[in-house]
Image (cartoon, rainbow, N blue to C red):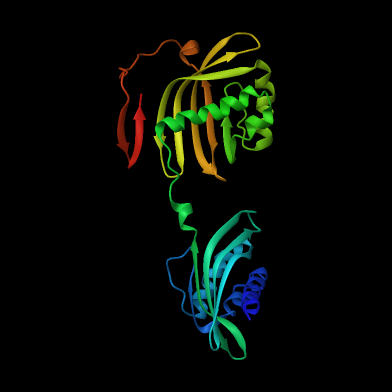
Length: 277
């Protein structure tokens, strides 16, 4: 039945749970073919299939079928659709597309063909313009306006790094980033970008330049240099890297000024659009 075909996935998934590559390879037919998710090499015998799972099992994967389409023939059946793996070693979840063709061999159902691939739309870069990159600052600035350190910390990516203006300590997780803003938000800061330089890449972008904060608690205005690197994570742009520093000439003395062009010039840099202000 169709439910029994879907149930064959559990035999393979249970073999994954043993973390034994031989157990997984034994789920494949004598002439089984595996086209793996993260290897260019077709695996066409027991040894090469086992070899693939030596590394894959280090992630401690466990799979779940999200969408299934079953075809049943004479002594063969097919299950194709979308599955999702939870990687026990990293706690990451990864979706993929799958095709299993099973054959009845030596008294049991074995995998004759297994093709696994990444979700292709996830490899297409998220489109963003230079102006939209600049406007990402307002999401962070708006979070500052709430005076809620949690709201600000949520603007940062899961593996973000914050190098703050007035702390020597790199902030490398949610708790440390929130901790910094507990103190900073007592000044009631609101920022404005004075100079912006944008770079756009594949699902990442960068905005670097000079900003100025007005401290609502005191009325003081403070300029600083900033670098924001954003990544597209969980359906939205988040801050992966934020480096903020004081204007150094106030402490080190004036430096020679370069010639600054008045107009915006767009030039390709390593195949990526870069906007110079």
